[in-house]
Every structure is written in C-alpha cells, then in structure tokens.
Length: 282
Image 1 (cartoon, rainbow, N blue to C red):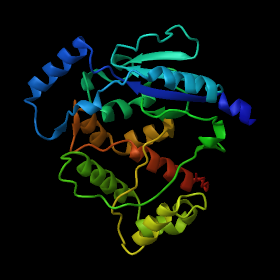
Image 2 (image 1 turned 45 degrees about the vertical axis):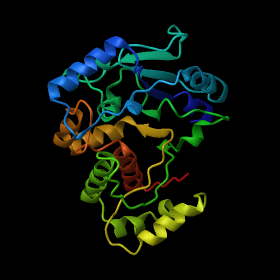
Image 3 (image 1 turned 90 degrees about the vertical axis):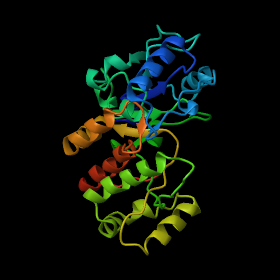
Image 4 (image 1 turned 180 degrees about the vertical axis):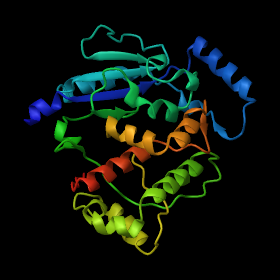
C-alpha cells in the first residue's frame, strides 16, 4: 500500500466539552448529588474548561494534515460556535452514539476513551487528540503509523506520591499494576531494547530507562500528553482480557482513584507489535 493511500485510512478523534453549558451543568450536578460527591473522584473545573480556541485545532488539521480520512468529534451533545457541522470529513459523535447506556451519563474521560472502538464508522487506525493538543506544522501519516503499526515511545518513570492530587497517582499505579500482570520488566526490555533505548529519544528518556534498570519490577511510566496513534483491535484485546476491570472503570461517572486510563492501550499496542516481531519507535 502506498503511503498516500495509507493516509486515507487514518482517522482523528477529538473529545470536547463545554463546561459552561447550563444543561450539561444540571446533569453533572444531579449525577454528583446522586453519588454524594465522594472524595475519591476527580471533579476539578480544569477537566471541563473550554478556552474557546478549538477553531485553531481545526485550522491546524486542515492545513497540516489534509490527508486525514475523517474527524470524529466526540461531545456530550453540544458543539462550539462556528463549527461547520456539514463538512464531509466531520462526524459529530454524541456519547449515546457509542457509550453503552449502563455507563451514561458520564463525566469521566476514561469512560469516554475506553469506548472509542465503538464509534460507528471509525477507521481501524486512528489518532486521539485532547482539545489542548494542536498541530503547528505539517505531519505525515508515517508520523503516526509505520507498516500498519502505531508509532510510539516507551520510557519508565516512578509513580510519585503526590499528596496534592488525590486521584492521579493512584491511577498511574493502577496502570503499572495492570501492565505487570502481563509483562516481566527485564524480559520485556531484553526482547525490545530498541523501544526503550531509541536513538531519537530526548536524553532524559535514556536517563529514566538507565536508572530503572536497577529495579527488577516496573515502577511507573512516563506519560506524554500529546496525540496518540491507536488501533481498534488493541481496545478489543483489552476488553477481552480485562472485561470486569474495564466495566468497573467505565461505571465511574467521574475520574476515580480505582481507574486505569488508556495508557494501557498504548502498552498493549506495543505488546501486539512485539508478538508480531515488529518494533517502531518515535
């Protein structure tokens, strides 16, 4: 398959919410009231704030990634002013279009992300964007996928006991615990050392990974906040392996200290690549 053809088979997915929408606020308030607002959830305003700059995201895609096949705009139900909802490349996806009813209403980004593979019409290969990640220069399909596999990085970093955040340190540890269930650290490093020590990595990644060689078990992973190339089959693999866990996570209406997030989808993408004898790195 030519690279130009490959690009036509890659979709973008972006999630967005308008935290100022009165109807959305009423539904969120009712959900919190029903839960009794437990301290174990993450309901900070930063999770839902809209900066009214999404038009620049679309302009960036139009200018720097014209090859994208489709943009799936995931929303609670509202959309930003000025959005051309009739554009042939745009697919507006409401939560009820792909998230099972038993998980709704949800205000948990993890629930939304763990159900991406259910989006109607989504390509097998897609790139996930948060609404604060913008394209500022031209990108090519091979920046995200090579030989049909996601381009990714792998760096270790200890989970930190951050007492100022009562949710995320637990989630990072949960991610690491789940990973350790399926991988032995030193065996994995030996099998795909090029993914841990890639020439294109910044020096700090080498430093993290070199230091981590001293410890026999995983202590955590460096999580990059950026666009994420993913595959639907990876999600299906995760749901087949951990149906009870992911059902529990998706049952949390808000971010919860017992969640795992979709960094696991990245990790299991690497697992599939390793099993197929293919390693690609950023």
